[in-house]
Image (cartoon, rainbow, N blue to C red):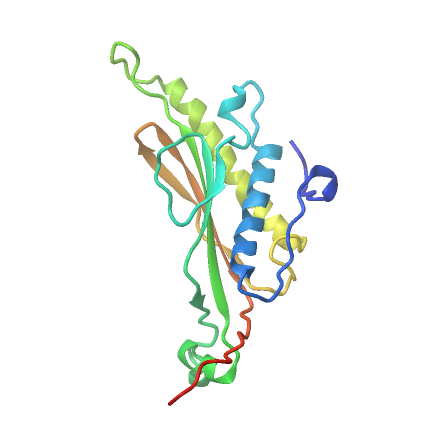
Amino acid sequence: MTTGLDVTEEVGVVLKKFTGGADDLYVALDNFFEVCKFALAQDAAIPGYEPEETGCPACAYVAEGPPAWDACPCLICWTGAPEVGDTFPLQPTLAPMHRIQLERQVNIITVTAVVLRCQPTLGPNGELPTPEAHAHVTRQINTDMWTLWNWLKEAKRQEILFPPKIREFGLQPGIAYNPMGAAAGCAITCRFELDGYAPDLTGLVIS
């Protein structure tokens, strides 16, 4: 396992810069996804596990929204709807519904990563999975969650993910998912500030 974050061209992970345009929301999601993939490949591979059980899943993609649990193992990332940051709730002129009038609205974006692993299932004669089988998967899920938590935090601190350092950023409480079908896993959600852009309103008129 690595001891720190090293996302460089040498390892093939180059994150995109924000351009101040309509594509920035997707750029943010794609960068988040790339850091999650790299993190799992570097630190979530447990010695002694089968290659398909550990590390970054071969099935990894960005989704339109919360995904169906139809594959395991897999890594899936998606974007939530933007919201207005409640930065000064006790100062009316700076409250969310007024900030837009002062051109100081803070846009908060949510991105989520879910890692699913295959759960032990019933044996050929209906035998329940053993405690050891459950512990085997649990170790991997816990490793996934702790890996993503620490890599995302450190990537932000080092100004690799969502720079600059002064950009608002927070990790939401991690979620451990109950087994559903043959899959179980975890989710890590980040909330961060994303600057808006001023579109060209030429062609819009009031009559």
